Image 1 (cartoon, rainbow, N blue to C red):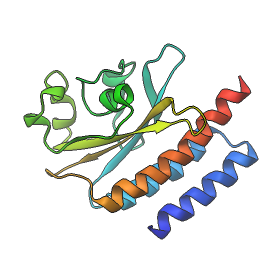
Image 2: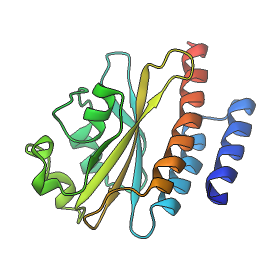
Image 3: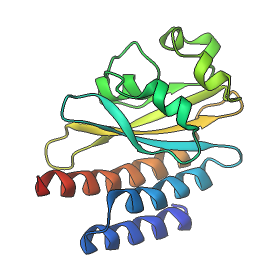
Length: 171
């Protein structure tokens, strides 16, 4: 696996153990994901809130108006990639927004930013398997994630799950 991913995971585990804020933990994970998806990939972590709606966890490469437009999306297998991944607890790939019915209502949002496709991996609890959020990646060209990208994001999502479970245990 990519050295950048392993370093990000080790650093994030240290931050979790030290009680660092979730945003600080997620920052390194998203940065590593963007390195893996380079060039021109943007990654995003969305988390499920107490009402079961997707909220921004950490998405520094996406503009505030985009994040506001997708804020509080309900998990739904027929909507986008992140909402579908949260609903199905499985990886959802959309190589081309214009060719995917799941993006019928939302395709104008990423398309207006120059993104062509995306994919999303659920962030799942290591204890219960429950979906805690999603790890999404947007691309500026039509393509699917490589096997190495899937493996790397799977590792990063597992660490994001540890941070989310730590926060849930504090409540």
